[in-house]
Image (cartoon, rainbow over all chains, first blue to last red; front, top):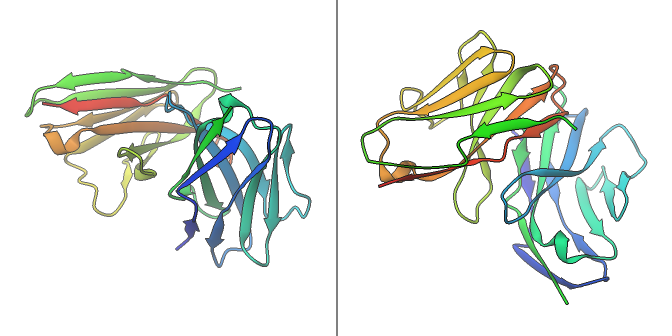
Length: 114
Length: 116
């Protein structure tokens, strides 16, 4: 079974600064996908970024980038130039290539302050 | 991007009644849909996986007679909470898989169920 661990229940960052959210996972699968989802106060789940395990290059989406360390089973999310609208819960998630269901971490609540 | 519509967004019901929640994929066919439950300040817990035209697969500890799932078409899955009780109060979210490619998942906006 897969597990996803987010060790930071809450984080705070000032506007325009950079913050990194941590995520580690455990799996015996060789083919899998990793995701970061954002859940703002509206509670809509929004895909932030996705990484395929077979790709060595770290995924980036505008201000969002990941540091994917496959050997260490680490998948951190870096948010650059933080904005007030980035305030949300962030969930790391794992999807095995052979499975059909996401495994979510416990989430990190990010507060962006002025 | 693809849109998944979930309705209602909020429902309040009396204990002992049943509530139906709909999840529709508006612009794509979803062979697989997922139903999650989320308690306040907690993560999403998968309740069941719904495949069009077949019985849903429930996660361990989820009562299938309590949470009835129907996936009768490629664009619609429903979750019915039968004989609801206050402990069933929660936020329920659906997601849909586009064309069987499970890494392309789209989420509905969720339903807040409050049972009095």
